[in-house]
Length: 506
Ligand SMILES: Cc1cc2nc3c(=O)[nH]c(=O)nc-3n(C[C@H](O)[C@H](O)[C@H](O)COP(=O)(O)O)c2cc1C
Image (cartoon, rainbow, N blue to C red; front, side, top):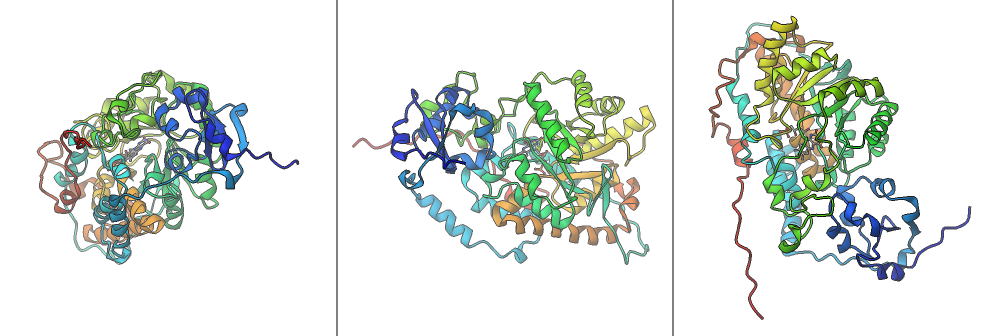
């Protein structure tokens, strides 16, 4: 093989305009001139790095292979000679210095007692943009808060004088062993919170024998996440369906080939919700006159990280398309984001493997009900209409949103769920403490399961039955706020629009 021909950094630096725009990512030069207007995140952010090394900005929000996959091969110009590239000057603001100091003052992990604690620390140590993306929810964030509050309307009816010397909270999910009835649900953009992104979750999941659902919009590449898994480690995949079905087919079949054990198709996001905390971060640009402009594809660039990365999602996805999914894969198909019993029934009738009763962590339709409330009606109606009982091996019910304690999980299991998805708490755990944080979060859940199973008088998951829970208030939407001081102390209120800062005239 002949040695690669290195480009000179100074030459690259001359291609710094809309007319000719080259960028460097991971030591390679790419001509992105023709791609500028197609970039889902808009052209402005690329132009900011025209002629320069864009790796630092690129990494948190793209899988490493995004650029090589999306750009024609003739635009891959080759490696750049490393010592010829001017370092991108990063000015460390006072705000950033203060954040670094807060990071060094994090409490040791053994002082973290519950999942709320991770959120409290994450809020203080995460970069502002990352915190805004992770914590934000749609509109007035009522559903986001309701997701957690709904669990306050369920109360236990524990049984006594059961021998609970040994308790076992392990279970099976879609036929696969899990050390607890919890899985790590799909959340996009892991590298916003930590340089190792989703790999923190993969590695911690392996140590604790839990299942990770890999998101379509992971910051690490799909294969990187699979490669980080231990032999035999079970992983699921969350799919956003692309308007271009050939792309979707390729992704799905690749996932199956790599051994993914369940395909969770997200059905609650034909358009991404307006998440105002994230939008206020103006993900792309600092200049307010620029951020309001739309790209040639009509995507409004003023709408935060979420909108910037999701313009490919197909709003035309419909029930009739599910037959096609069945024709292209043998993986179990599960709909993620079902919000009423009628749709759960349709999914059952179509022979799907299950549904996730979820409102996307309150990030989509505000005033969608909580998954736990929907669970109660789904179980009732599927029993009535199809004679089903839950938990059910053939058609499994999952719930996510607002779960912060093992007691929340146990309520969902008692009411018929096979397992529960947890999202933000694991993001906050790795944003604050990396992989060890996620391991600690899982350990906390194990400890909570052990104690609460004993106190409920249940020795196994099979003993967590509906009679253990009083559901009589579940549908009365009068949230008991403030009902949970820990949660409320973390919840960050939304902000009003603010006047622009007026710079003094020189
Ligand atoms: C930062 C963030 C990113 C998310 N990204 C996705 C995604 O890409 N696809 C998806 O189906 N759901 C996504 N979700 C929704 C989660 O899978 C899940 O429904 C939700 O987080 C559960 O609520 P919880 O965060 O209160 O546990 C995301 C949630 C958060 C908080």
